[in-house]
Image 1 (tube, protein in one colour):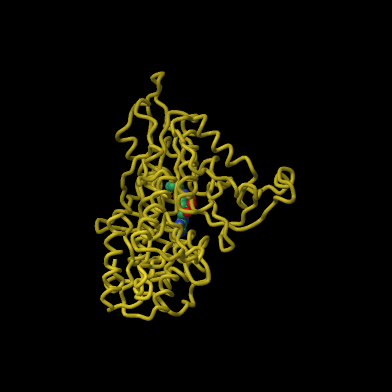
Image 2: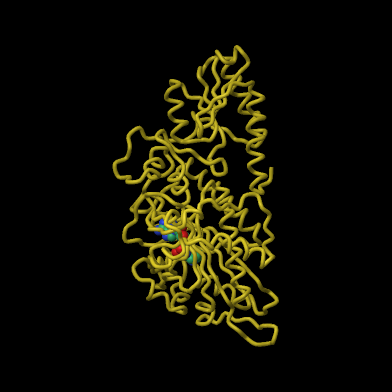
Length: 454
Ligand code: P5A
């Protein structure tokens, strides 16, 4: 993408309304624009980051055997009357009436709708286990929408729903989600800690939230700091292996880690040596629930089991805050010059800065680099504007692409360009072809380590 033809409305001033750094940086980097309280347009750069995150979520869900689909944003109120949640959900639910005076709502979540789909099409335990998910916009009329996309009213969620014949199978589905989420967040460069939580309006007793530690997080968290060192890394997971998946969950949930809703000071003190006790704040980037037959019973979602009995199906639901993750990643990865995207989620992997726009040789070298990077699947953002070098560097630093290639007449005279890491600030001079090879190797290696295709 050529910056001269792109739409990147960066702001020079720090917007006064933004209280936390990710919100400020998203506005300054021209990623989002607020249209109403808690409702945002995703401008081109923000949209690319959101799409990268969605892509990782899709890949990891499908790796775990979960099936993508798409349900609508608007739902008939009658489904929610069946589960009893139409009245319970309260003012957070946006209620709408159509021209025929039928009650609709903008879905805050989809347990009822998926249960309706299930009961219409599934009859036998032989069709289980089943996990269906989608990535769709939700609406919750939050009392206090704030912090930009972190607590929006309209926000993008991945929500998955599991159907199993009994509790043991449903708990395996829960564990499978826990592990797939750990991998998902790791690929985004995040450490997200599963913490025992409370279930709220979704219901059930078994629930974990995934929290990214950050000063600006909305949840208070209590944890054994050794939990932050746990990593899945490149280990292979067989998602059908119940014991293996359960062992990974046991490893990641053995140490004390709870939100304020479930925190127990006596247990905290008894279990965690004082030197490891930490109290902090966290951003909730996901939550998983096992709630058994809470929806299947009232809504009549039954299957015939292997003894020929009709039993309500055991269900769970599992959510990832896709749009919130954009803010959470920036909260976890920035410096005083701007965003520092982890490689896995960067809107563009690399930027090209032309130091002498209009100089034939420099323009030609940039064009060649652009073509070579694109050829290797690394679409660059090429700053081909007629601007001072300082302004170009400031824009690149603000939008935080992991790598920058700087091309100028002096370097080119010696056959060199400069490759700079946004994270470390370190630069190295090399030939243009070597720079392309280096980046291709880096991104390919990162992709393979994460189990992504080349
Ligand atoms: C699980 C999937 C559910 O709704 N039903 C379907 C269950 N869970 S949840 O915890 O309430 O939401 C899942 C994740 O969505 C994000 N989230 C939000 N993101 C931005 N703005 C909001 N107002 C908002 N509310 C929830 C969180 O990351 C949450 O973990």
